[in-house]
Image 1 (cartoon, rainbow, N blue to C red):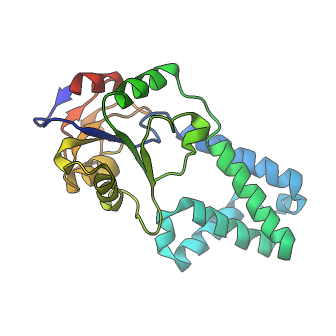
Image 2 (cartoon, rainbow, N blue to C red; image 1 turned 45 degrees about the horizontal axis):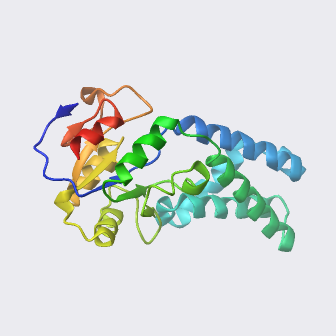
Length: 238
């Protein structure tokens, strides 16, 4: 554990999810592959196009509405809609394809198990103080078994823009009704998590599950209050 700034008393903790409590990149890659297989099986017309086709749909939707960068679920749904429409689907068949494919991806995106040590840590922390999730992603907390530890979860949307925008941090602070300076945010990304939380007046702890942590190799203009080498070190801070 490396301290960069003095910590004030911690009365609540907010957590990033992806790449903080679990490695997320491989999960998304597997979910994307599973979605393609699902589409090929249930909608054979999709065999006539490749990944570039679907990327083009996503790019077109984003260019038409840049605010969709804050809602990846909505962006995916609209991309599926335009893609299937371009492949000739319409009416009820189009609606069914969008719903089935999105639900398949969403399930696979959350189709993994957390190590028991994470459950033990989150249980110990949640017994001591309130925990809130703040994520740019859309993992299903119930499916991965984390919902019981968090009293609330704020997910990025067009109404609550992605971190480092302070909207979700502000919403969490209002929900907790605790001064921002007494809330600790834990996250892997020094830009979206640490910078965003600091702008909102939070204290910050940097921890990344998906890579070796060397602050000298990270793109950042700010320092966290503390750098963790293990998430269990949070217990010593409270």
